Image (cartoon, rainbow, N blue to C red; front, side, top):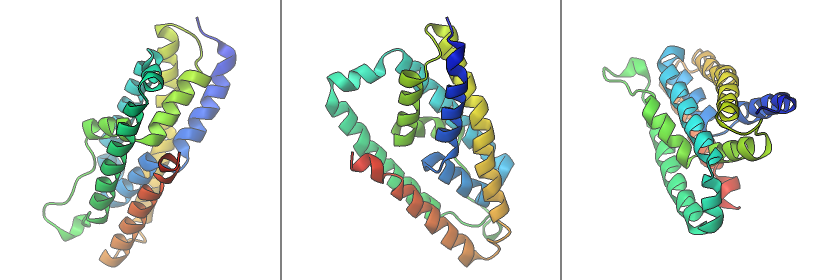
Length: 198
């Protein structure tokens, strides 16, 4: 059964949570600037797949495991921090496509999907959607939740990639591109602050 009165609040929550700066959008912005829109699409699809899997599993009660075993949440934080620091280094070291015969490549769908499981913002979004904005019970309601998030994310994630692509006009020199990548890496690390002080 679906509670249709919650669909609009869920859509607004999806826009605000997927459209604001966070690890995914910062990396999509950097990917758009470094690789363009089309080459960043697999990264974006991986984000959707990761979020969908999180929402489905959380709907089945994963969040209760963290209540029973708080150490599991601590382990996740440590893994998330280490992985995001590694990604920050990867962003800093990304080479301009024109400067190398073997340019770097954006995240694959699998890498982006797995990243959601160590992404603090993805956990917060999924938990919020499942606990506060669940539009009903049963598989139809869970599917509706996932579909709404994917449609909204198509708009918000695409916007960040396009913004990154537009930035490439400014990033016409290696120094500017390197500076941009360093700033993106710093913002990615800064996005860890809320979860680390929790």
